[in-house]
Amino acid sequence: MVLIGEETLNWWERITLKTYVMSDIHNNYMLFKKMLHAIHFSKEDRLFVLGDIFDRSNHNPNPVDLYFQVLSLGERCIVIRGNHDQWLAEYILDYFSLPERKRRKIEPYRYNSFELLRDRLTPIDLQNLAKDIMQWPLQLQVEINEERYLLSHAMTSLPDELQLQDYYLAGIQDEVYLERGIPGYISICGHSCTGGRIWKNRKGNLYAIDCGCGFRDGKLGCLCLETKEEFYV
Image 1 (spheres, helix red, strand yellow):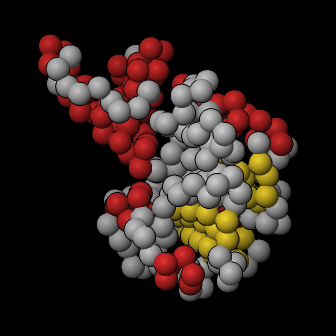
Image 2 (tube, rainbow, N blue to C red; image 1 turned 45 degrees about the vertical axis):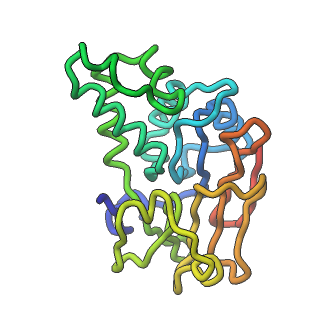
């Protein structure tokens, strides 16, 4: 498991203008570009993407340009691993571990990402992408304006009480977690579609920001941590 704490985010010590969080882009390069424009994302800003960059979207899917756009942001953008990212990486690594004659016999990848990526990337680039995904953290801890945040794809945990990988990637049905969050932190997660609007619990210490971007009528949501302003495209 890869888990990164706030002490490793050295660039965070520098003054930044705004910090944004979004999740579950699901191959929708067009909406990602629109969101960067909507928030006026600048060279001083920082962005956390809480997983599921890939898979699901069948309307104008473009995982290659989406991934390259994320890479082009450099240190300004940090990606947390989601379950769809994990599935894609595992499939790529399994596929290329086989002799070429056996690759035709394995089950096709359940989503469109693998074929779309393979159309434009070399086998080496695909495997490097998979290895990069497996290095994306499962949870991050950051502090902004004296507020402590935990960022993960599906569920967060106390930093000193690490859980198994699937806890962060897929979560569990836990009403107590949704009601109480993690004491002493503000948790922000994606994974579970909220029906088009960012959701927060009554305590205001847990946000769910997957607004359904992977579906035809879904939206991409984004939250500014300094102001709690919400953006939708």
